View (spheres, rainbow, N blue to C red):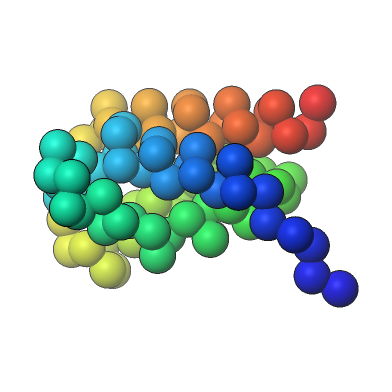
Length: 93
């Protein structure tokens, strides 16, 4: 049985990717707002799972290296992970 997707959390994850992670630098281009939509599902599953920060870092780095072929700065990635962990903690509390 498939669980219903929490659209609020889904949208929050997408906003985090656009606002904080943004390795290709499109966050100021309104027309490119859906650029990272393909990665929300994987992160959504992770924030609902028993994860650690390194799990999120591994996932983001894999996307950067294998899909986008460009890496985000360590600072941007760390801030993204921090925001995603806040969602995770909110869900688990």
